[in-house]
Image 1: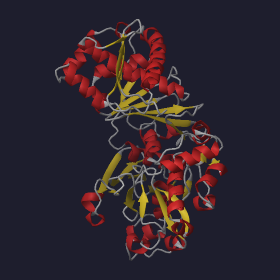
Image 2: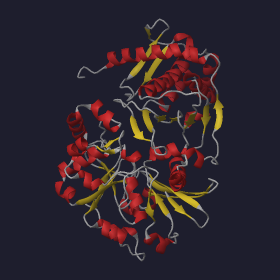
Image 3: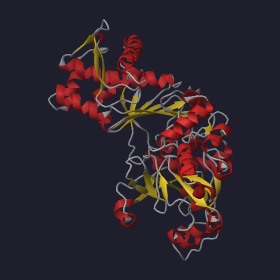
Length: 509
């Protein structure tokens, strides 16, 4: 997030697993330039596949730090690196000057799942998974940075002791532009299992459980809308940036997407993809064993939450193939011809192990709550879609979310093109559904955040800063009477979900 003034504009940068993308947004919030570097294609010398190296154990996934990369990744700067950053010469590429600056040359990324032992250890130290979630917003996750740091300290203590600063990918990228270490922001810092999300300071118990001397190596976290400094003279001299260009704290891809979709209090974004993801704007978070709660990137008083559901579009396509002759128009016809609430028939469809909650298999219940082996084809289709959206509402409310009179639902992803699926979403949640183009939401959101950072000294709310941005398009409004139908069904669904969960629990649990 850098501000550039020749044509007064802000740049939004997105460092993702497979590429680096940039957009330029002008003062009227129009995107007038975009470009990207695709790692596998444009930087073949690093020999990555999908932007990463998968190691022989199949669990450890890293990326070459000199190339660099995405959310929940971490970068280990060697003692003396800050001095190098502060004295870069514009005659040489960054890569040539920084190659000796890292104590670890292959950094763990978000796909790494090799830290289960460290996760259990961290939870045990603070009194269990729920205690850790209440403190940091999430139970211990393998990809979260605290657990990755703990593994590096245990496996490679020499490299750890040579490290003077540990950055997230977001603060690492900001440090390059700043020419000195950029602080970690509260929002991305919430994805580490280390930050106390209520008082926004590092948790001493969590730091101690991961590695010694860690607080000093992390530096103090800052609000996400902070201006962290002016751009490094390296970029002024080599690339012609204006010397007054400011750098606003970089954040993670999910918080940046929340900004790009311009969520406001009470809003919810539903990404309907291979897996379905919910973004929630929360006032009073209730951290749980599922989902993640982060500090909100555009409002320091509030929070955001993320919930992921594995059985998304693949499950919808499977039921379409089985029950609607592989045709979306037949699938839609079934949704239009069946009644709201599906005559009391409810279904759970999890062909792969779900994570919210941990259930596998297909389970169908009639209006009397008796399990049945099959539904008519049209009832099956409505049971799938109603069930998917009821699960989302129940689990969102479990994290403290409440639908408000001003709530908007923003739908993105493949299924957001299907008006009949969106109608069920509006009916179940009791709120209007809008669709929005999110091809570059993290990138554009970063540029919006740069504008907000520049205005934040004046206490201008984010919604005011982005009011000129293009509006989402209304796609569905709740059917009259839907609220009453689903109020009763949602309670039944929650009870039946618990029943299925108990039945399918593995014996070892």
